[in-house]
Image (spheres, rainbow, N blue to C red):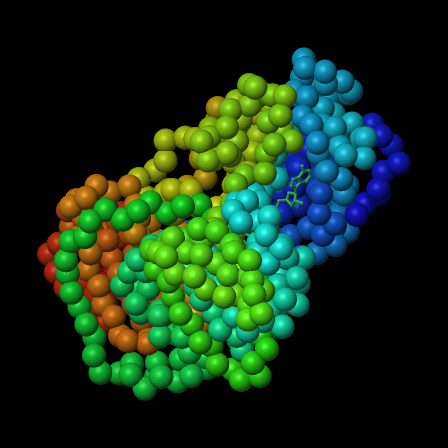
Length: 493
Ligand code: FAD
């Protein structure tokens, strides 16, 4: 950290709260866009998170690594950014007790610092939902520290119960070895926050095997059959936001191995249920988990990954004019402004309150944290210069994109990939599946592609990104749209 400053009174033109991907992206962009302004980043975590190895896969789809760094790295990259390690405990907007050299207001920190700001961006992230958290055998994943605890606890475990159906649970189930895993999912298929039942079925064999053997099997079965079918589907459940402080590939750096020395990954999935309550243990198991489907399971450890709630209490307390969404996020407009003048928000801490483009929706992921942080910086600087009305919203908010890996497979999600926002019976689905190798699903509405799920190395992301954005009528192509021997791009040259 630069500092820590000995002064209890600090002042900066542009202040960012939070050292996660949103806050760091925001601070980096502020340094570039407004080199003469003083920029201060206040973070409760000792390390910051930066996006590295940024690789655009298409115009909209970007893959990057998330690296934990010492704050000095940020100051080296951006010398005008000062970083302090402190926790903000209160926000006093201008005219409500704020003092000092800036006219936006003042932040108060847990160490007693008072930070006056011209503009502030709240990037305080989210924390795990407090389900079951008061039980000593229940662990909630959020940050490096909690993964370290998990690693130690899994090492002595025979059976682990994983609760949740989002990205974190999916990755965890894939990574844990040498221990029996029981996966409790609320839906009727796995990984429901991201994929539909078909993709889940595709992923399931990999979920139950060691990833090496899954790849081998994939090669064995990949060649002959390409299945295509076309049918309409009922409206999918809208995706729930998920996520928190760890970045992508967090699991790649941690060996999660249970008692059993073998590499086996016995997996059992309990569908359509949740944990009703934890029951006391006996001489066989330290505790039992009672599920809402009536099943009771003896466990050594329960890992809860059931989503997050925005971490905004320090800013909302005492500020009734700061509007929050029902999901707990700070409501922001198309310029990332909250309802309090000069207070912006980005990343997991905010809820996008503008009229969304047809193919975009918010999901609390690192991709959006990075996009929002950088865009909020542009808006803060324009606001400072009196030019915010001229800021056009960043093109990344035109379409939802996400790239990740589930069970060793590359997964690309584009647009309304699960039929989000589309009414029942209004859309149809076309799919191509090669068992163990690839799974391609398109969501079509009136002959136009609205979304896509691409599992495996399909190399189709650019084609379908363009088709979603251009809304070209592709009905004349019929099933050729997914014919692996037809280059769809040729039709539109
Ligand atoms: P955060 O990363 O949560 O950062 C918030 C920052 O604010 C922290 O530095 C914190 O210390 C600081 N802070 C909080 N309150 C205060 C305060 N009062 N004062 C000062 N500082 C404060 N997303 C993906 O896209 N892909 C994945 O594969 C993926 N895997 C994940 C795995 C796990 C286990 C978890 C927990 C999350 C995962 N996510 C994933 C979600 C992703 O990590 C988040 O969406 C993203 O990190 C949000 O970034 P952020 O900067 O908004 O918030």
